[in-house]
Length: 412
Image 1: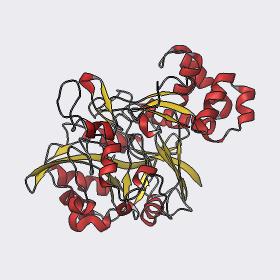
Image 2: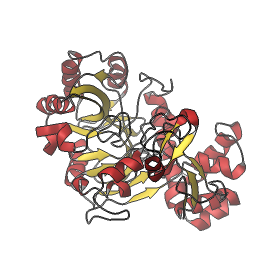
Image 3: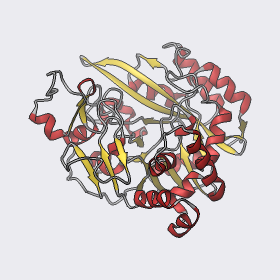
Image 4: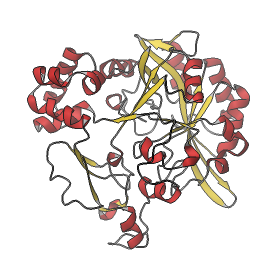
């Protein structure tokens, strides 16, 4: 069966998350979006775990169900630790096949740090040791490094990460077979590193509110059970892992370099020109994802490995409607239109991915239909995100990005 999965989200018990990040609201929005499988997130938090145990129906195959939406047990752990005289900050997503295994993981990690302090706990635990602990408990678990290019908290982060996966996970490296690309990079950027060829690249929303689930996701054609999904990811099965759904990576908030306090957005070449410092204040800039990829890449831009999993860049439907109609995101009229369009076509992903141009133009306002078709063709304009600021994307105004420079990207 073909289905869309978003594995990485957070619950209402994580900091800076919506109070609506509960099972009820997640299942409602999963149906609106067209997401058949969603990660629970935050299973290390005792209150959230109790809610999951009380609410979800155990299907007996590593999948759990609520209101006809499937869930898989996941959490994210933040490891902050010193190694060989340097401090590293790594985020890893843990997948568990059962509540029994989850309880064992929580029992062990709970002896090493305070799991109740946040839905995404912070532990002074080496990433390699975290992997050893989890795999010793249950070899069917998965550990997938999260948003691997984010500057401050990731495997390859410019401010906090490693240059090689082997340096991070040491003898556990062979058990790591998938990586999460994050909002500020897409698979094509990762294809430039030959060292990543063996890994399956996944994409997830890392959502902190129900409305944003699925902004990045994964499309499978396999059985809906834990072991089948794990094997697809382990084998990098191109017949069963159809493609990933991506942000336009320039829209991610760490795509370019920059200094947010001074409003400075810099391309990698501009950062080099200014010796890594803000042109306004002289402080070091936050080195973004594009620059970091350039540092580690051993292939030219545009290279495509033989065993790649394809991807599609999308813009959320509410953003398209908002720009097409000139209304604010979150407005009552926008929500009404969004729900009306989904009532006609079934789900948001059906509208963005599958409904024919003819049907869109027949049943939607002309500019909304045009916006969806322009997005499918990649005809968008973007000011790249930097230093925690999301990029600014425009579908209709080709002058939005200003003069064509390295600093302001136009994609056609």
